[in-house]
Image (tube, rainbow, N blue to C red; front, side, top):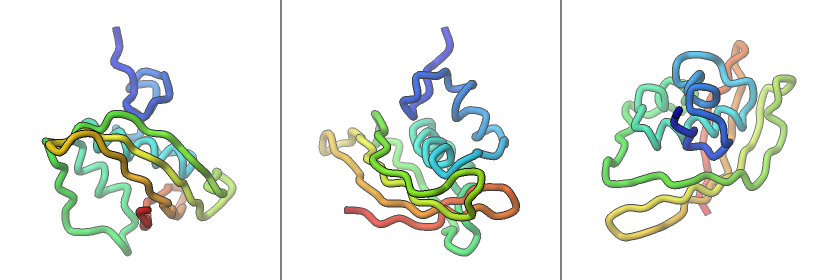
Length: 125
């Protein structure tokens, strides 16, 4: 049985975010957001850095092995389609770490450059 994608789509990892982690371009800002959540869940730091816009990308993005990402909900999407050059995805990511269960709520901005979506920045609330 194939492993389900951590992003919560119900698809297998290979049929969903796995293809983006493998190098395919995410078609929308939401798809990129879901794939970045999946990258955190599976510990794929190189993908997180590669999908970060070069103007805002940090030198590193250490993934805490003590944090387990449990599920993702998309709260709002503004633009971010294949016909846009920018988009916003608001999400809530639920996790468990040494302090217990928590959630991360963020409104993230994305930009499409040469046909590829990139994470630009996010505001936590």
